[in-house]
Length: 217
Image (cartoon, rainbow, N blue to C red):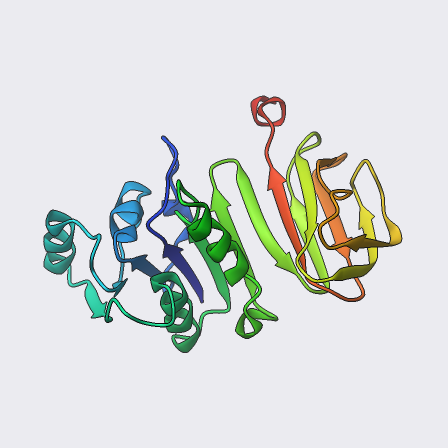
């Protein structure tokens, strides 16, 4: 089962994610992210958070459609988005897609990216989608679908990422090591419609940015 978690961040004009949902999937609105879900063509099954940012008219509409609301205290140790991840896992999700997870607040954007590194998500398929950009946290291997010319950046989140091997990228890696804080892995380029990344040890944040040239072909 796939869970789509709509956080209360930014959505670009024209972003639409209704195609992601199949029968039996779960759509979670993270407080004000419930409005983001509706904007993206999604109908939340549940809204989670301290309810300090969800518009009253959105709440009324969702209540009329039978949406559940799980309210938490404002003072807590987890963000509302992390609470949504725990809920999705308890519901049996094996894949999680985050939308609205980036925005004006850099701390929230970074925190949501780092959520991909939660130990509980190891072995699951998880990604953040933000307009033309997708992000994954890789601990062993990843297959990326895209187009030639798409930008792929590899950013270590652990001290060292070792044994990196890539296929389908212009600047190939053959068992290389990327050091935490170094920028060697930024702005690689896809040379085919698929690329693969494998590593031996570490945690690697992978971002794919679709290019205008590729999208117009």
